[in-house]
Image (spheres, helix red, strand yellow):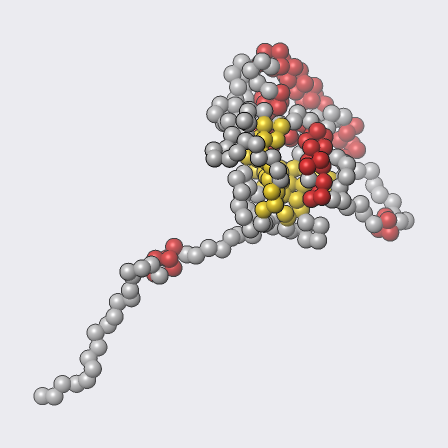
Length: 251
């Protein structure tokens, strides 16, 4: 049976031929990893065909979907913890896309400027989205939370707690943030589903699964019948008729 250290995953793989569409798969009772590479390795083992041509953790991008199809990249362990924090009814929605190397001809004879990402790594080698001083404060806060609460909360929750303390969206080291992630979320438990089901299942892209908003990354609106049209065609509703005389009466 699923416990608080597992979660159900909907995986949306961006199509190579058309990046505005994707194929959707799902798997239940997935371990909640503390490390991004560990999660990527798990996905490669279980979705190797679907993620092709990606073969290593560095050959595909990974992210999660929050809110109304807002795509967020999982670039570090903090992002991974944040992905777990937006789970709904024990489900999270991840997206993945294989990295296609640029054509050799495109870069031939072209001098490229130094990437801003290099500058970021120089000041923030931990790659956690924080500057050097914030990163030091985050690590110190995380270590303090581990000392006080490691027996009550798993590591990925403590990371979210530490991040919220670092960016001043929470102010207590003793009481966790008052969000469902800490208070009432029962991760990995889905009513009516068999806990032994771990086989990936291909789902048509038109279906909407728990934890996902739509099945199109271009976020096109789904068309449905108007409630007014439904009312007009409902059984028992008839258009009123006007009384018309069949002819003029004689005097």
